[in-house]
Length: 266
Image (cartoon, rainbow, N blue to C red):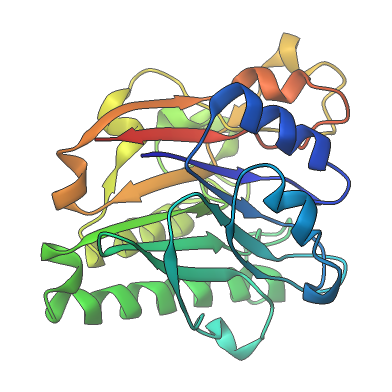
């Protein structure tokens, strides 16, 4: 199975780029974040025409939203209402073969890394705490530790020093602050998740999946961050064969500021 995760930053605006990704990579499952389309306007037929008959989308008007496109049949599970905000940040299915799949779009957190001064950052930290509690409960039941599960998405945190262009300069920048890294690590430990990309390409190799639109020339500066992740349970980590980040996508016409992350699982 080839699975991809990509913050597309508007599905309708970039559906031609999605088509290009499908033609180039032939993914079996594609998980999208920030689709920015309410459910009634989701381009269902256009997406099915790309070769994905099984589609789960959970959207809202103008921002957020997630979708799972699959060639593999699945059972749709109800998404949890994280932080009681109803803001379409989670899609959850069980693929044939009893593989649980979570697609997350974790809040970005704004610009000020202080929950007292910035409600967006407070929301992000609360979201991470709820994730930890959720997966810890699953692990106690044996589901995560023994089962086959995959968690992907734009987690909006670059956890390792080599997941950012400059660890020292970004320590006080939202997405790489110590408290965010600490809380994301807690989520990972709670679910016994294995970072599939770093399993294939461990640190200290630098890996990025996001480059800011604010950079005049992202190729020259290469000031990226690895915000997009594919995590798997131990049962699946043994079957991970390849992982790649499609950096070239950042140079496509009218690109998202994120690129796709792809993992091959035997």
